[in-house]
Length: 328
Image (cartoon, rainbow, N blue to C red; front, side, top):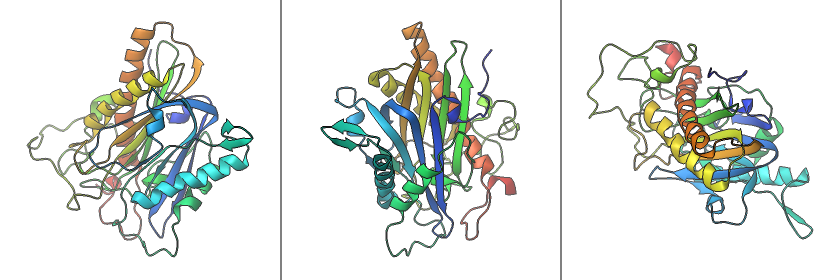
C-alpha cells in the first residue's frame, strides 16, 4: 500500500531537517532544508522570471554533486542573501566542501517576490542574511505550515499563499517528500470557491476533503494576480533513494507536474517557478528504470498536495491584501 510518512512532511525522508524564520513586520521569511550529511541535488526551472543562487553547479556535468543545504526565501533579489547567512553558519559548524584547508558550504537558493504584500519593507539593512541564519538554527524534523518561513508573505491570485509540505511512502520502500512556498500568479483554488485543483491527489482529507466542485469556470480565462510580476512558486522534492545528479534533475523536472496540477495557470512568464530535488542515498534502487519513474510521479503528486496544504494552512495577518482560505 502507498501512504504518507508519519509526519506528512518532507522530513519523513530520514536525515533531513527544515527550519523557518519569519519577520511579521516585514511580512517575509526564509526556509532552509539541511541534511545530517551532504546530499545529491538537481534543479529544474520552468518559470519565466527566476531568481537563484548556485543553480549552475547542479547541472549533471558539473564537478560538485552534493550540497549542504537548500534555501527558499522571500524578498526577491534581496532574499538571495539568506543563503549567505546559512553558508556562514554552516562554516562555523565545520561543514562545507573541502578545498585545501578551507571549507566552502554549498548552499543553492531560490527567491520569490513578496515585496508588495502589505508588510513594512523600509528596512535599514537587508534582513535576509539574518533570516537565513535563524532558519538554520531552528531546523528540526517537525515544522509548521502556512504563514511560516518563505511562505510568510506569499499570495496567490485569490488567496494568501504559504508554506506547504507532504510525503508519500512507495511499495519499493522509498520515501518522497515535497516542500513548497506558494506565491503564484495563478490560483490553487477553483474559481471563487474553496475547492482545490489538487483535490484528486488528496490523502485522508489533508486539505479539507472537499473533492471537486460540480461546476468549473471557463478554463481559458483563469484568475491571475493584478500585480503581474509579484509571483513565483519555489519548492524542493526529496527522497531517500540513491540517485545520481542526473536522476535528481529528472525528478525535479517531473515534480513540476505537481505545480501544473495544483496551480492554474502555472509556469507563466511572470512566475519564476523552480524545483530542487534532493537525494540522501540511503536506499539503493532495485529496479532503476521503474523506480525512477515512480519516484518522479510521487514527487509530482506530493508537490500538488503540498501546494494545497500551504494555502489551506494559511492564517491571517494584519495588513494582508487578500483573504486566507480558512475565511471561506
